[in-house]
Length: 184
Ligand code: SAM
Image 1 (tube, rainbow, N blue to C red):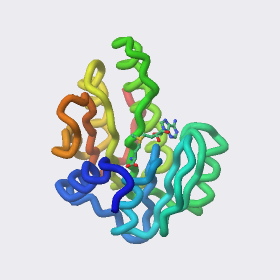
Image 2 (image 1 turned 90 degrees about the vertical axis):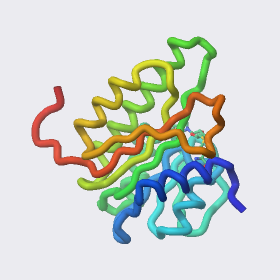
Image 3 (image 1 turned 30 degrees about the horizontal axis):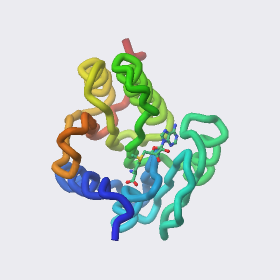
């Protein structure tokens, strides 16, 4: 009864890493449509905000914002729903629009990861975790290094439910660290 087979990928990642946000914190699902991941989270958690450029059919427990997650107007709507509270678990299954040109696509993938890192800097609680999709093909060692400065533990996962031919993988970033010195 899941809307997308991607639900099984998230189930696998959440269970393997025991990612359970505290009851009073929020889960934000970026790039949520058609809603497979939000459905998984809604089975376990009641405070969920889902965001997507595309519309999404409603899911009980899930508050939906339509828009680009980086646009100030979208962020303002998300912040309003969070009511000033932080996010315990941030999810991104977003993909950039691919051109077929390898270098351009690799750069777009990494730019999207950087955008999500920036978003996590703003919204994710200390001690919070995140799951971010990326595509192999350039830049992932540097990205992993950057993430390791921000989180206690960073794993790269290829869930069994993810097609083998697809170059998609997931960063699982566990427990956001306090950032008391500027990043270098
Ligand atoms: N996890 C979803 C599920 O289980 O149903 C599938 C997500 S789908 C692979 C990726 C989604 O990311 C698309 O619906 C796309 O519209 C969305 N997306 C891509 N860039 C976005 C952005 N900048 N802001 C919001 N959504 C975005």
